Image: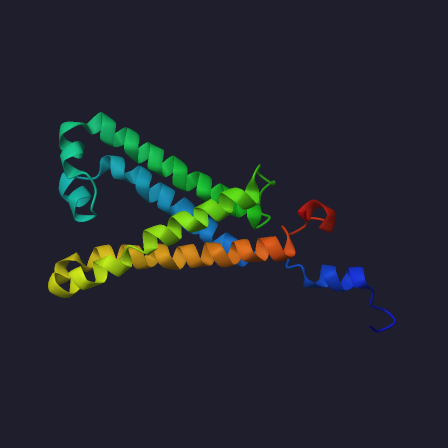
Length: 164
């Protein structure tokens, strides 16, 4: 070590100003929450095209609207936790645990690409479902890497004693 460098400054120098991976995941989740919420006003054909419950949209619109709100709320919570991990908003309870679960949810959804790929080879009109899975897989990897950085470096602006 040089004379001007101490162990604590080298640790602090390593800590990032922002966790850009969690920031990206958070913005994606918040955009997805808005997309889910907008589903309340979609036509049944649009719902069916995107793989949603078109029959429910027609026959039980209140239940369908409630489900849209529930999924939008869930995605919004994912986004808020991600922004918290990125240091953009205050620290939320169970931050690392929730973000680990969120990463797992996106990754598991993304793994649906494995059984979908052979189906798309015989039915190319279903390629959009493979694309949705691949998007989830990428977002899950972004969240996973962001959570890894959160565990390794802590939350931006956090003192090392708070990280434990």
